[in-house]
Image (tube, rainbow over all chains, first blue to last red):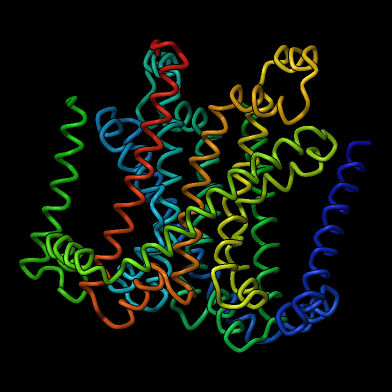
Length: 247
Length: 252
């Protein structure tokens, strides 16, 4: 019953989006915004082309590396600041301030340090992802009830056993929330980096489409990225809910 | 100042000092990062010359418009969506994914439609900031005590009066969270849009200085934006803390 209702809701939302798109197309003209249907048929033709696959691979590679870096550094900072009370008290406000800064202003600095190639994009993406992962991990570790640690001590668990059997399972759902948000903002960081200065990648593809007035291509790439992010998020949310229910 | 605060200050001063030292001794090349002291003097000279006044006005003006529109529109939409449970149920999955997708990639599409003017910047700014306000409004309205809405009905208040005199104050703490997020998102989206493509503005200025290899100007502008963002965020955070204290009657 609710499942069918949810499906109808989604269909209605999709229909509304398509109608708004169509109206915008009528107002703006097809050179600025192609109509929904031609865009869909264009999508089918564009995806197998070498131009798209090369750019998509470049973006995926940069995103993967950036995500790895963001997770590794973010988790390290989060565990350290969560476990060491003084470091956490000193560092948290600094992290919060840095988190809310418009990091895009720092991109030229990143480019000057890392250069125009893939390393610049990766560094910029990782920069976005590190902070939410660190902040949520820190919060998760701090929120572990002290009684867990006391019982671990009573049971004479080794430090390693304490981490793997007590700390990690207790903090996992919260930490996973951090990883999910980190995923999102790292993707945004990599794409912003590509839009500003890059020769390869989907972000730069959108920008060159815009300057060449290839709106079909541009809208199609934007939609593919949109769908990719939405699906990844749905999957991560699903895992997150399952983790939260288990605890 | 507390001990923790002192240590924090020492850490920040040490980091800036280390950067200064590394730049002065040539460990970090001047073409990469200029010493922080030089950033500050360059910013002072830039501000004193008045060369960036027009861009400051333009960018901050757009940001203020974006934030104001997002807050008012977000609150209004939040009220409407909250009043129609069926609509809310349908929109919930959309809200859950909204900030997970890079909305910003539609900025070039907006430029293609509206041309290179402030309109696409305002639109992408509002699109980024308004949903945070809607979500915060819904959260806040959920927590308005039932008895208040009953009182409103007993007094036969109309919808607008109920919203302004009852729901708005009762949901205020949650709304303020939305305001904070809207400010932060609006700021980021406007700067990013200017940075990537815009006829003028501070973001455009930084991008230009970068492509001209004009590091003194670029770092001065970056410093300026970071200072503004930090000041605004700190003020909002301080307000939030103060109001939280007042609500709990001084007890924490």
